[in-house]
Image (cartoon, rainbow, N blue to C red; front, side, top):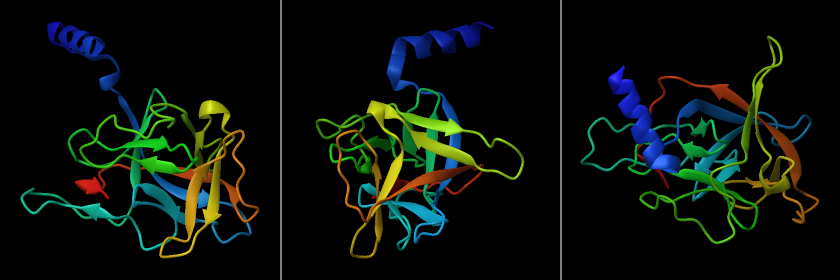
Length: 193
């Protein structure tokens, strides 16, 4: 009992730097009759993408047990914050950049964000309503109404943004839902790049 009280006291003293992990989620885009329906969501080049060659990860040669992965997973916390499922010290936070793009921090830059970013809150999780349906990851920070995918040229064809009030996206962009599957015992890369 004394150990539990000590852990609770330590967590209280550390404040926001301690976050209880709620869920580890695999993500997929949902938009019927569109090129992004059932699209894999990947973290690469500090941004999030639908489709493309997969996530970009790195494992230092001196780290034993480091695993490469072909999927992007996020950790969703009870306070509405999210981070990439990675081993790198300090973690990699998921945030919304000033241009509205869904982004993640570079390795070893804990708490460093571009000025005007939306950080540490806004993500929501809606469990499946009934058997046979899917859970949904949402974002409602700063008055957002969800996610938007905009076409891009290059290896990663669709970039993910948050639909923020006052942001005008191209008519080629598509609003979409994010299906979220709870994942356990998945390979964990060292970091995403």
